[in-house]
Amino acid sequence: MLELKNIKKSYDNKLTIIENFNLDIKQGEFVVIVGPSGCGKSTLLRMIAGLEDITSGQLLLNSKDISNYEPSKRDVAMVFQDYALYPHMNVFENLAFGLRIKNVEDSVIKEKVLKAAAMLDLTTYLERKPSDLSGGQRQRVAMGRAIVKDAKIFLFDEPLSNLDAKLRHKMRAEIKKFHLDQKGTSVYVTHDQLEALTLADKLVVIRAGVIEQVGSPQEVFNNPRNSFVGEFIGTPAMNLLEVDLEYRDGGVFAIGKNRAFVFKLPENKTKFNTEKKQSPKKAVLGIRPTDIVLHSTEEAGWNAKFEVLFSELLGHEANLILKYADGEMNSLIPAMHMPQDLKSAEFYFKLHFAHIFDVTTGSNLNL
Ligand SMILES: Nc1ncnc2c1ncn2[C@@H]1O[C@H](COP(=O)(O)OP(=O)(O)OP(=O)(O)O)[C@@H](O)[C@H]1O
Ligand SMILES: [Mg+2]
Image (cartoon, rainbow, N blue to C red; front, side, top):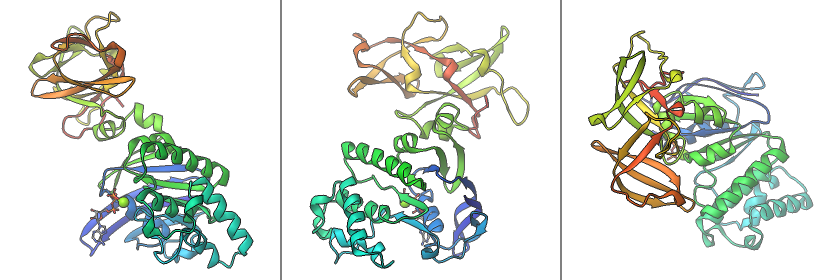
């Protein structure tokens, strides 16, 4: 439905913010674009909305080039990161504005505004001016302004960043419900990887204006294309451990710094897809904190002892910070399994879920 073809954005012909951006968005899809602050997410949405020029490339809607269309001709509704509310209008009028300029009937406006307000928990604030609202309430008004429109494409720019944890959870569900009811197409931008995982049909991970990976949340989580994606998606973040690789006894061994561990890699992790077709001598072992568990009798050979520097209780789970050579690694375990003696506990690495990344490029050598 919406195609971004070779989109590039630069300012003053010098500073390039987005490059080589290619993305297909299907009708009815919920696409989440996730990446660190400053990577170009808002710029991308603003280009889709028509609020920012595209330096080169094409934006196609149902195969028609809309790159030069006025924002009002694009049939998109956008929730702005900085809210963009009208300060002199109360909440009701802010919500109603987009419909008023389209000459929608008063009774229809009222119905739509009240429905959106109920969904967003704003019913009691309809008479207030934006200046008399909290940040989270303003953010919900910004969302309401987009929701009341019957647009084909909804663009959300970090619409939940100012809400508390409980409200954020509730709103996340509301947005997904709204999307499903509306049968519209949504492009949602966030730097919050949990929001991205929970909302997306299609997840797009970007770094410095370049796409690092596109896939379903599960694909991206289970098979990160490189160490950046591996570390960015999932919390606590994936441990990235530099290892030496040794080829002996018919296998491949990953050896941690100061020989903190010597693991024979499982068969499925020993086929390396390197550019130079050589067996690498060094690599980065990526392993999620949930895949480092307390000593288990499962299979010998993937155990190693570490000192626990400290632990963070997260409710059901505890995050253990382990001393590793000159750095640290995390292990996330059920809180009830907290070891008595933290000085030195033995951990089991579920290596069949680990990833081997190239030391220089970071690319996943097992894919
Ligand atoms: N008018 C401008 N001139 C020059 N650079 C700009 C301009 N507008 C934005 N930028 C730069 O473009 C980059 C991307 O900005 P953008 O707002 O798209 O990031 P973002 O991914 O939305 O970040 P955040 O998560 O913090 O909202 C930033 O480095 C920003 O400084
Ligand atoms: Mg932004």
